[in-house]
Length: 220
Image 1 (tube, one colour):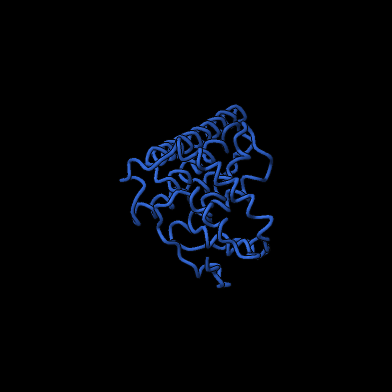
Image 2 (tube, helix red, strand yellow; image 1 turned 90 degrees about the vertical axis):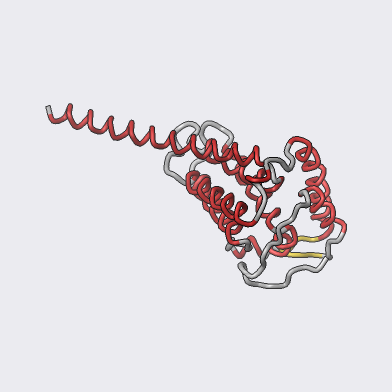
Protein backbone atom coordinates (compact mmCIF):
# COMPACT_ATOMS: atom_id res chain seq x y z
CA UNK A 1 0.00 0.00 0.00
CA UNK A 2 1.36 3.42 -0.86
CA UNK A 3 0.60 5.81 1.95
CA UNK A 4 -0.42 9.35 0.98
CA UNK A 5 2.21 11.87 1.88
CA UNK A 6 0.48 15.15 1.20
CA UNK A 7 0.13 17.52 4.15
CA UNK A 8 -2.72 19.49 2.68
CA UNK A 9 -6.14 18.52 4.08
CA UNK A 10 -7.81 19.04 0.72
CA UNK A 11 -5.17 17.60 -1.56
CA UNK A 12 -6.34 13.98 -1.77
CA UNK A 13 -9.29 13.05 -3.91
CA UNK A 14 -11.32 9.89 -3.41
CA UNK A 15 -11.95 7.28 -6.05
CA UNK A 16 -15.49 5.97 -6.30
CA UNK A 17 -15.28 2.37 -5.13
CA UNK A 18 -17.68 -0.54 -5.34
CA UNK A 19 -15.67 -2.51 -2.77
CA UNK A 20 -17.47 -3.04 0.52
CA UNK A 21 -15.96 -1.50 3.64
CA UNK A 22 -15.24 -4.90 5.19
CA UNK A 23 -13.01 -5.77 2.22
CA UNK A 24 -11.31 -2.35 2.32
CA UNK A 25 -10.50 -2.69 6.03
CA UNK A 26 -9.23 -6.25 5.64
CA UNK A 27 -6.97 -5.31 2.70
CA UNK A 28 -5.66 -2.27 4.59
CA UNK A 29 -4.90 -4.37 7.69
CA UNK A 30 -2.86 -6.77 5.54
CA UNK A 31 -0.71 -4.01 4.02
CA UNK A 32 -0.13 -1.56 6.88
CA UNK A 33 3.19 0.31 7.12
CA UNK A 34 4.92 0.45 10.50
CA UNK A 35 3.01 3.62 11.38
CA UNK A 36 0.75 6.17 9.74
CA UNK A 37 -1.20 9.29 10.68
CA UNK A 38 -4.97 9.51 10.98
CA UNK A 39 -4.94 11.64 7.80
CA UNK A 40 -3.05 8.93 5.92
CA UNK A 41 -5.42 6.29 7.25
CA UNK A 42 -8.48 8.27 6.13
CA UNK A 43 -6.94 8.88 2.71
CA UNK A 44 -6.16 5.17 2.39
CA UNK A 45 -9.76 4.27 3.28
CA UNK A 46 -10.99 7.16 1.13
CA UNK A 47 -14.62 8.18 1.30
CA UNK A 48 -15.35 5.00 3.23
CA UNK A 49 -13.14 6.12 6.13
CA UNK A 50 -14.98 9.43 6.37
CA UNK A 51 -18.36 7.73 6.35
CA UNK A 52 -17.31 5.20 8.98
CA UNK A 53 -16.22 8.12 11.16
CA UNK A 54 -19.60 9.75 10.48
CA UNK A 55 -21.43 6.63 11.68
CA UNK A 56 -19.44 6.70 14.93
CA UNK A 57 -20.30 10.38 15.45
CA UNK A 58 -24.05 9.61 15.44
CA UNK A 59 -23.96 7.02 18.22
CA UNK A 60 -24.27 9.41 21.23
CA UNK A 61 -27.61 10.73 19.96
CA UNK A 62 -29.68 7.59 20.17
CA UNK A 63 -31.13 8.74 23.47
CA UNK A 64 -34.15 11.06 23.90
CA UNK A 65 -31.85 13.90 25.10
CA UNK A 66 -28.14 13.87 24.22
CA UNK A 67 -25.32 15.24 26.43
CA UNK A 68 -25.20 19.08 26.38
CA UNK A 69 -22.94 20.67 23.77
CA UNK A 70 -22.13 17.44 21.94
CA UNK A 71 -24.57 18.07 19.08
CA UNK A 72 -22.82 21.29 18.04
CA UNK A 73 -19.36 19.73 17.84
CA UNK A 74 -20.39 16.43 16.30
CA UNK A 75 -22.87 18.14 13.99
CA UNK A 76 -20.07 20.40 12.73
CA UNK A 77 -17.88 17.36 12.04
CA UNK A 78 -20.72 15.70 10.11
CA UNK A 79 -21.14 18.94 8.12
CA UNK A 80 -17.44 18.77 7.20
CA UNK A 81 -17.73 15.11 6.22
CA UNK A 82 -20.75 15.95 4.05
CA UNK A 83 -18.66 18.61 2.32
CA UNK A 84 -15.87 16.08 1.85
CA UNK A 85 -18.27 13.67 0.12
CA UNK A 86 -19.75 16.50 -2.00
CA UNK A 87 -16.36 17.73 -3.23
CA UNK A 88 -14.67 14.33 -3.25
CA UNK A 89 -11.84 15.47 -1.00
CA UNK A 90 -10.59 14.98 2.53
CA UNK A 91 -12.23 17.86 4.43
CA UNK A 92 -10.60 20.08 7.01
CA UNK A 93 -10.52 18.42 10.40
CA UNK A 94 -8.58 19.50 13.52
CA UNK A 95 -4.85 19.22 12.78
CA UNK A 96 -4.10 17.65 16.18
CA UNK A 97 -6.52 14.84 15.36
CA UNK A 98 -5.41 14.38 11.76
CA UNK A 99 -1.67 14.26 12.52
CA UNK A 100 -1.90 11.73 15.36
CA UNK A 101 0.32 8.74 14.55
CA UNK A 102 -0.94 5.18 14.82
CA UNK A 103 1.26 2.08 15.06
CA UNK A 104 0.70 -1.04 13.00
CA UNK A 105 0.51 -3.18 16.17
CA UNK A 106 -2.28 -1.10 17.68
CA UNK A 107 -4.18 -0.49 14.45
CA UNK A 108 -4.27 -3.92 12.79
CA UNK A 109 -6.50 -5.64 15.42
CA UNK A 110 -8.99 -2.75 15.24
CA UNK A 111 -9.15 -2.89 11.44
CA UNK A 112 -9.64 -6.65 11.46
CA UNK A 113 -12.37 -6.38 14.10
CA UNK A 114 -14.04 -3.59 12.13
CA UNK A 115 -13.92 -5.78 9.02
CA UNK A 116 -15.69 -8.58 10.90
CA UNK A 117 -18.39 -6.17 12.13
CA UNK A 118 -19.03 -4.79 8.66
CA UNK A 119 -19.24 -8.29 7.20
CA UNK A 120 -22.39 -8.60 9.34
CA UNK A 121 -23.59 -5.17 8.19
CA UNK A 122 -23.09 -6.32 4.59
CA UNK A 123 -25.71 -9.01 5.16
CA UNK A 124 -28.32 -6.42 6.21
CA UNK A 125 -27.38 -3.58 3.89
CA UNK A 126 -26.32 -4.21 0.30
CA UNK A 127 -26.26 -2.48 -3.10
CA UNK A 128 -29.87 -1.88 -4.22
CA UNK A 129 -31.95 0.91 -5.74
CA UNK A 130 -28.71 2.04 -7.38
CA UNK A 131 -30.41 5.05 -8.97
CA UNK A 132 -30.36 6.59 -5.47
CA UNK A 133 -26.87 5.46 -4.48
CA UNK A 134 -24.62 5.19 -7.54
CA UNK A 135 -22.86 7.73 -9.75
CA UNK A 136 -20.84 10.90 -9.17
CA UNK A 137 -23.78 13.33 -9.33
CA UNK A 138 -25.94 11.17 -7.08
CA UNK A 139 -23.06 10.82 -4.63
CA UNK A 140 -22.62 14.59 -4.49
CA UNK A 141 -26.34 15.04 -3.82
CA UNK A 142 -26.22 12.44 -1.05
CA UNK A 143 -23.19 14.24 0.38
CA UNK A 144 -25.21 17.46 0.36
CA UNK A 145 -28.04 15.72 2.24
CA UNK A 146 -25.49 14.46 4.78
CA UNK A 147 -24.37 18.09 5.11
CA UNK A 148 -28.01 19.11 5.73
CA UNK A 149 -28.39 16.42 8.40
CA UNK A 150 -25.31 17.80 10.16
CA UNK A 151 -26.73 21.34 10.06
CA UNK A 152 -30.03 20.09 11.53
CA UNK A 153 -28.11 18.28 14.26
CA UNK A 154 -26.50 21.60 15.23
CA UNK A 155 -29.90 23.31 15.65
CA UNK A 156 -30.39 24.70 19.19
CA UNK A 157 -33.13 22.26 20.23
CA UNK A 158 -30.96 19.86 22.20
CA UNK A 159 -33.17 20.16 25.28
CA UNK A 160 -36.21 18.90 23.32
CA UNK A 161 -36.66 15.10 23.21
CA UNK A 162 -35.67 13.47 19.89
CA UNK A 163 -34.49 16.77 18.37
CA UNK A 164 -30.98 15.29 18.06
CA UNK A 165 -32.04 11.70 17.49
CA UNK A 166 -33.92 12.37 14.24
CA UNK A 167 -31.11 14.23 12.38
CA UNK A 168 -28.55 11.76 13.78
CA UNK A 169 -30.58 8.91 12.31
CA UNK A 170 -30.73 10.80 9.00
CA UNK A 171 -26.92 11.17 9.01
CA UNK A 172 -26.45 7.49 9.93
CA UNK A 173 -28.77 6.30 7.14
CA UNK A 174 -27.07 8.54 4.57
CA UNK A 175 -23.61 7.37 5.67
CA UNK A 176 -24.59 3.69 5.54
CA UNK A 177 -26.44 4.21 2.25
CA UNK A 178 -23.42 5.81 0.59
CA UNK A 179 -21.04 3.23 2.09
CA UNK A 180 -23.10 0.22 1.03
CA UNK A 181 -24.67 1.74 -2.13
CA UNK A 182 -27.99 1.01 -0.42
CA UNK A 183 -30.85 3.04 -1.90
CA UNK A 184 -33.23 1.89 0.84
CA UNK A 185 -30.95 3.43 3.46
CA UNK A 186 -30.75 6.63 1.39
CA UNK A 187 -34.58 6.73 1.27
CA UNK A 188 -34.66 6.28 5.05
CA UNK A 189 -32.22 9.20 5.36
CA UNK A 190 -34.50 11.42 3.28
CA UNK A 191 -37.46 10.36 5.40
CA UNK A 192 -35.63 11.21 8.64
CA UNK A 193 -34.49 14.56 7.21
CA UNK A 194 -38.05 15.45 6.21
CA UNK A 195 -39.31 14.29 9.61
CA UNK A 196 -36.72 16.47 11.33
CA UNK A 197 -37.71 19.55 9.31
CA UNK A 198 -41.42 18.98 10.05
CA UNK A 199 -40.65 18.43 13.76
CA UNK A 200 -38.56 21.60 14.00
CA UNK A 201 -41.17 23.60 12.08
CA UNK A 202 -43.82 22.37 14.54
CA UNK A 203 -41.65 23.39 17.48
CA UNK A 204 -41.04 26.85 16.02
CA UNK A 205 -44.74 27.31 15.17
CA UNK A 206 -45.73 26.24 18.68
CA UNK A 207 -43.23 28.66 20.21
CA UNK A 208 -44.54 31.53 18.06
CA UNK A 209 -48.15 30.76 18.92
CA UNK A 210 -47.27 30.44 22.59
CA UNK A 211 -45.50 33.80 22.49
CA UNK A 212 -48.48 35.45 20.87
CA UNK A 213 -50.82 33.95 23.46
CA UNK A 214 -48.59 35.16 26.27
CA UNK A 215 -48.36 38.63 24.71
CA UNK A 216 -52.14 38.85 24.46
CA UNK A 217 -52.53 37.86 28.11
CA UNK A 218 -49.98 40.46 29.20
CA UNK A 219 -51.67 43.05 26.99
CA UNK A 220 -54.95 42.53 28.79
